[in-house]
Length: 171
Image 1 (cartoon, rainbow, N blue to C red):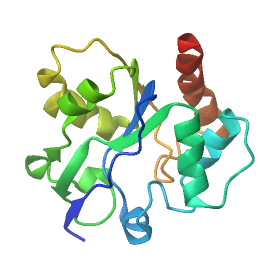
Image 2 (image 1 turned 135 degrees about the horizontal axis):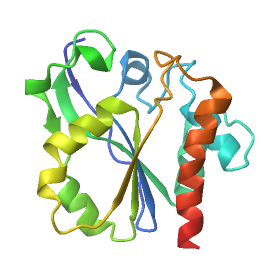
Image 3 (image 1 turned 180 degrees about the vertical axis):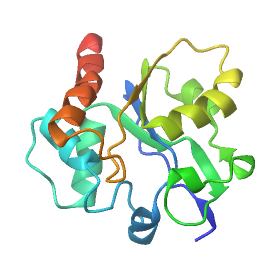
């Protein structure tokens, strides 16, 4: 794996919250699905916070996010990365997704959550300077990747509760 590209945006016009990863890892690229690594905690955390049983079907997981007014995307449209870790991304090769158009076409978005440090750093460096016309709340959450083992599942889930709190602010 070297030159890699992200997946299409998961969102509809009702989205209030955007969750951003950096770019898919090897397991996700092979499966063609966001957060496909079996030990990634993203989908279990979201199902638990949205009070749903774990969903084995990817389409059902996507529908769960859409029904909760959550959009999902990656900061990076493409990059060069040997291996699967964000730390291996060649920063000079990063091409960001088109967030100006995204925020123009999704005006209900009020909160942007970053799934880990790499997505936040890339967004702040490559995207944020171009978003002068948008007032958004940004928050980094602990990575749900199995490579981020500093926090337990319950600790990560508690941090991720901020997504649900942001949705409740909109109600």
